[in-house]
Image (cartoon, rainbow, N blue to C red; front, side):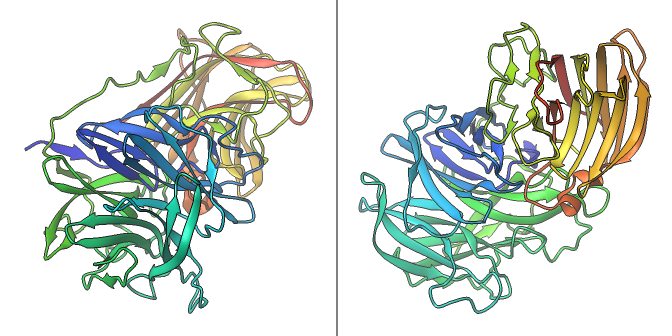
Length: 521
């Protein structure tokens, strides 16, 4: 029997939403303050995925200026109807106000339209449902109209939407308030019509350890909905904090072309205790139906790291090389910016075969758009390396590689000019306070960096070229600073290239000849 390994999308890919169109499967996830927004993937077997692009890849679609860590784009939903793909999502601003919008495309690889913003659409985790009678419904969560009975008490609501006009029409319907009042934070609703029943699948319990997936059903799309007596249909909150997969929730049901049912959901893998550096990842698990209710992973009821694969022809895609030599004219889809990129601060053409980062005054330790190009950490143990040419010319100018959870929690491994001397320096920023872990004078203008992480032990090395031996600058730094459990928020760790002129204008730049990333045992 063919098996697969969870997560099917490792690293920071939370809140999965997926659809099937014929024999093709498409999936999107949240992206928060990172640009481009909403990565979109394609699969033929639900296990092996290739990234097609990003739904929100133009500044006209996504303005993330000054967006705080873990704000921005939350919980997209992808749907398909009559030859058109829809992606609907919530932009959460710094005051935690929610703004819901959707975009469309004939081709999921893009281009996607500019946003259609919806008025009077409170709450988060918006979704669309196309009913058999031609009507389309919007659903999300909100504070109950009658008020909250307990903290984070939320109401799942539904309203018809006129997609031609781009607005909600008719009355709002409160359709469900979850399985248990102790669960709280009812969110992430998806509606399905299966047989004679309408089902609403939601997340409850918050996105932390008590996260769960619950379900209700009705003969009418507007309700009343009855909750399943077996709720929650999936959670790990009862398994304890030592279980290797935690905070399971935010599900999406999907039927294969052969009539089999599966569920995508988010969960996290812990490392070195209850620490989640990778953030929330995308998992897959089988579903069967009994008495017109879903049973998740029958006989087990939990997510597994190894599981029998779907009964679909295995389709593997070409793997991206571990090393990016920056020989293309466009950046690989694995790379992201912090917030919407402003200014021409990066180039693949000014020095062909290298990524040039121009120093910007913005700093990684501020809520800004720094000169940063990064990718997700996707494995609990990994090796990352980069080749950089850079000569700091003014006091404080710095460039190198960074490992980041957010502005207040990260490592910076940089070549920096301090008191007129060029030094290689490792800085840890934890909770907004910085300390230099190691520093050494370095007079050459070319350096190679390497980071090796084995669990929560992160070690940092350098050398002048590939013929030289790696020199340890600092070994076994505490990687827990990159976990959401210390740093807070909803994202996962990033690794990338960075340069700053520390508040001053500068014409200087750093050239990165290559960057590599790979899993290690």
